[in-house]
Image 1 (spheres, rainbow, N blue to C red):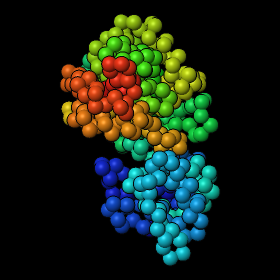
Image 2: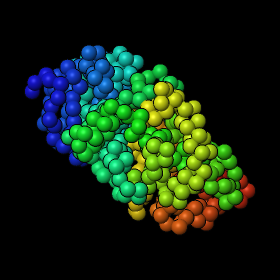
Image 3: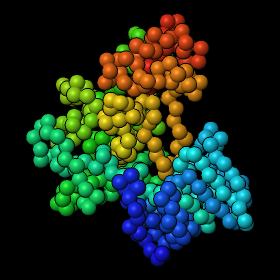
Length: 388
């Protein structure tokens, strides 16, 4: 197979892959691990082209000491997840296999001094997770639609990758891919992304502006609706519904529920300023706050089902290229009990009449030994993270 920049690979979960520039493909035959790339690291990192890295579950090394490979896994997975890694020896080298994705990117390569390692895995594109932001919705189309109209989704045929800044991080800027329905929409976005990019990265505007960590240790039964939320620069959502949108003063906003969008719009002058202040504290404003920070890749209302598949209060959006350790809103011993007694209700408060919170109250006596609580109820932070 050619030592080329791009190979039209088989679709994986509906996605197609792009290999790093100047990397030599040495295998392309396994349906489970279809990419094996040799030589990651300079000049194979593709940093100038914006490639984030490769992710997979096996690293094959024929020259470096095992300690170097262990460092790779620890940086990528975090020390707590190293129990999921299995090491073995092969002729002239070692194999590392993991039940979780190991991410290999330029920063990890630099920190572990990797220059010639064979790595099996899926390529990561310019976006956070080799997919388009906001489920591939055409952002320009919102500015042409009647208020309340359903979103229109773009195509990989018309895509554009946007670079945004992060003044609070010394690592690379964000590169996010967006899909559009036409070349005209793509070009309009490319010419003026400040106009079309949603505020707050496309996360819920009400959540960014109003849902605070204050009151995290108050009783879940008495905490206010805006208290105890986990949101921070390293714990994103809040989730957004692409059907719940507004253009106010020429700016596009999303929200999770229509009710909270109505609240945000009714107090727009105050809440928009509060949201922009918070976002700027997390990621910096740059020349325009719409071009600061990441975009919503994983925190969408569709994850709430029913049935619930993914809630970003419990499992926040990840930054594969930032060496960010897995963020846990709830300690593991507490999580174990929560799943034991109320796991069938995790995250279903918005879609099931607060059934999850009711379950936490009903099982308070079973949960309090491992979960932070007041005299009569779990902390609000546990309720928000587990049930919302």
